[in-house]
Image (cartoon, rainbow, N blue to C red; front, side):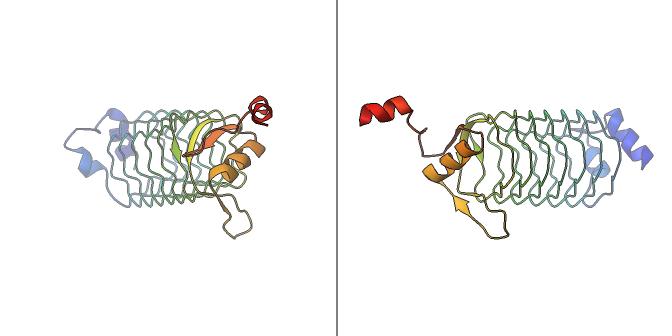
Length: 212
């Protein structure tokens, strides 16, 4: 295992033809330190990466579907266009990571730290984000949260457009909101700058008074 990780950190990744031999499905890298390792387009589907330290690692285009990443630290890492569908990443840290165009459909990201992350056009369709912290993240033009579970998710101060409907329930039963109802829910949860795709921002009090 140590030789394998040393090879990664030495730069035997990315376009190197040896890379497919170094990275494969169902690997066990639990608790390894792969910080700053070049792992672009890595094939890590169904691999075990719980507790991995991958600070500033380059995982652009990596395939991590069905992988387990709970407690892993991806602070500052690049996961641009990475695929985490159905991954389990509970309490994982993605602080200030580049997650633009990430596919995290149906992923378990409960209690994950995504503060300051770049989330431009990221997909979390059907993902479980309950208890996750997205404060300070950059949503760019939109983020896809269709049917995602967001009870106790921190959206404080975020600005951008969300694709709904979103599941705000926290009692085991879905409670889907969309349109103006979802916009109002964000406003009530300290995120008045979030609007829902197809729904304009709520009118200001001045506009409301003028209309009357």
